[in-house]
Length: 147
Image (cartoon, rainbow, N blue to C red):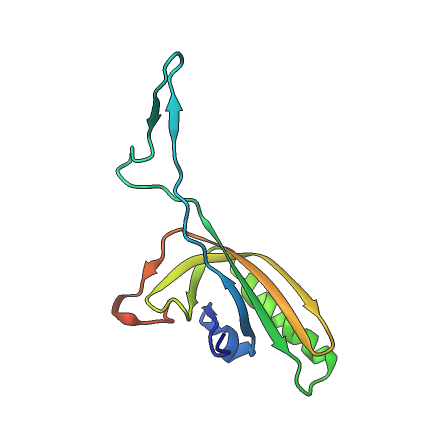
């Protein structure tokens, strides 16, 4: 992946602000919730999935893996940078706007629900999971990172 690609969350960019390289991403397609009932002593199954006039979807789990590379800085400063990165992602109490550079015309309303890291002497691998609304929101006029 191109190293400038990343995510924008709370008006900070993962690569431009923290130098985190997006190494893996998983943005699944939302799954529809089917509401069906069967009547006793009947071979018929009734589908109530569209009873409100529209389809209902499950929230999606978006997964990103970031790599932070230790340059010529002390290990304590590098650990502090990893902590700052994790605090940035977990700081909001509710859902916030999440822009993915690979999905330019849409954004998600998401919250970071899981984060873990592995630190070696020269890199830190940070795995994140966001729980997001299933519907992507269209960016009117093509704007990208305003709230």
